[in-house]
Image (tube, rainbow, N blue to C red):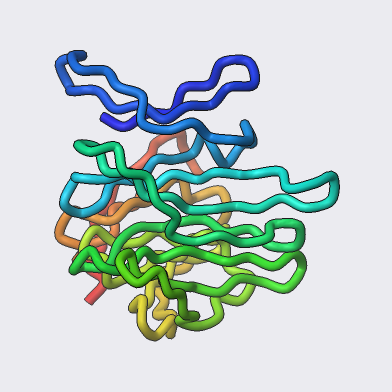
Length: 206
């Protein structure tokens, strides 16, 4: 289990076995901002963790980095660093082969783009605009994105971002959604607005 512990102004990254044994600290997060508490994210081979570090460079500048720490050796290296004054970067998950880390770059008042960084070469590239859509959910197979809004559900391939509608919803109907483990279905919680009942439905995106 990878976990973030916050105490006063100290934020640290730890790992522990599921039976509670071998609790070890792996890293210290420089800046105890909200982002530090939302991760870590396991790699596909479960050998390393990605975590966010926000570093205050000076009074007017903050740097956000994605770092990769090896659970066995403790090796900690930089994957990506961005100036976050006008920009917010958030990791989504890994490509099917575990080589690319997908992340969203959001510019204030201008919308978002999907990006990918190579874990070995540490080079980044833009995969396309997401407009002003809310943060998408990456499918378990790393090939698809699920977009949720108060009005609708839609999905796209990570390499195209051409959104395909799944169904329309009213804001009062939707109460949650998640990918199925095989990435072929969206599991949806939908509320009946006429009576206090919620339904869980499986929708095949094909």
